Picture (cartoon, rainbow, N blue to C red):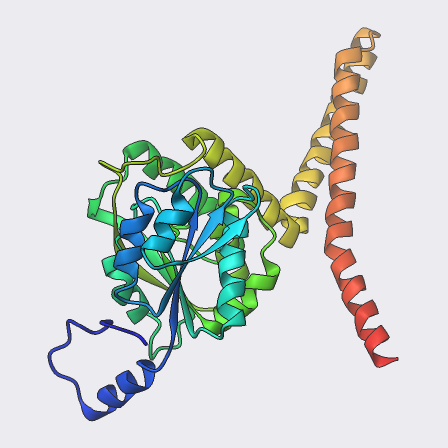
Length: 327
C-alpha cells in the first residue's frame, strides 16, 4: 500500500480521491543494495518501512553484520556469495520485485546518504502520471555534496547525456522510483557492473521510450558513519566514465567510433603528403613521420571498419532472427 505520498495536500476533489484510493492498493518495494553498511542500514530500513510494503536489502558479499542488522530492522535480505557490484545488487532486487508482482520499486543507498522520508515525494512524481521513472536530483542548500564530487558528477552527467537523448541533471543519484513497466523493461537489459548502473538505467530508459521525471531530493555526506563508496572517488568516476563512453559508443558506433576513425585517416593522409613533400625537397626520408602516418592510417581504418561493423551487425542479426521466426 502506498503511504503518505500526498501528505501535503489539504483539499482534493472527488476524482483525486478516487485516484488516491486506487493507488493505495498498489504495492511498493524498497531495494537497498549494500556492502558492509552495518552501522547505517538499520536506520535506513526502519525509515523506509514507513512508506513501502516491503524492504529488501541486497547483501552483496558483506563481511560484517549488515545482514543481521537489516533482518532485525525488518528487511528481507538476499545475499550474494561474493561481491558482484551495485549493478548486480539492483538487478537482484528488480528480479525480486518482478517475481512478487510489485507495482513500484524505490531504490536507495544503505549508507544513510538518502533521506527515506522523501520516498513519498519521489513516488508522487510517477503516481497517476505518464512518467515511468522518478529520478532524484541533488541540488540546493540541503545537498551536502563536496565541490569535487559535484565536478565529477557533472562530467558523468554530460557523458550519460550522449546516450540519453537529452541533458541529464543527476545521472549518478541512486535514489529513484520506478513503475512496473520500467522495471520490466530495464531488468533483462542491465549488463554493467559496479556503479555504472545509474547511467545505464537512463540510457536504457531512453532506448525503451520511458519517461523520466526529475524530483528534488536532499543528500547527506557530512557525518556519515561509513564511506559512501567502496571505491576511491577517482577510481569510481573513471570506471563509470569508461563504461558509459563504451555504452554510448556501442549504441552509436558510426558517430563515436567511425567518425573519429575518419578523422584519423584524414590526419594520416595529410601527414603522408607532408612526408612526401619533405622528401622531395630534402631527399631525406623521415622515418618518424612515416611511422606516425602509418599509425594514423591503420588506427583510422580500423575504427571506420569497426564502426561500420557494429552499426551493421545488429541489423543483420535482427533480420536473421525475424527470418528464422517466420520459418
